[in-house]
Image 1 (cartoon, rainbow, N blue to C red):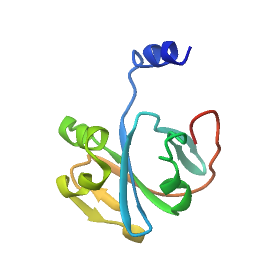
Image 2 (image 1 turned 180 degrees about the vertical axis):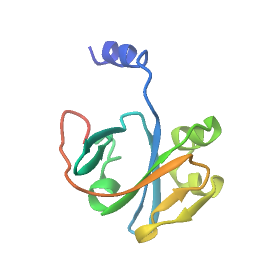
Image 3 (image 1 turned 90 degrees about the horizontal axis):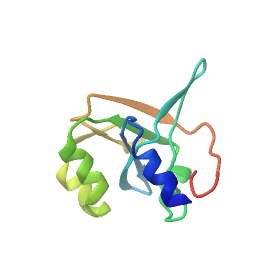
Length: 124
């Protein structure tokens, strides 16, 4: 059933973002395709991260992160396919609040703080 759901969801176009943070003085970034505006007042956004593989820990344990909106396939591929330790050696970034990396080739970014985390199924 999960493979059927995955194949159906791949047919639904949605935005892709790269979420970045500074976790224990280590730069962390990953591609997500679940970024959405949740509320305008207060301004809230949401994204989900696979928690089964432990990808959620840096975001659960960090207080600040950046949502980088990117339309450059090469940059998206870096965060989707390259080993985590190589990613920030390949892309250009500047340092934001709390040392959070902001991708300089993103067309927009949002600096965000943690509001709430909900664990549901295999994602947070």
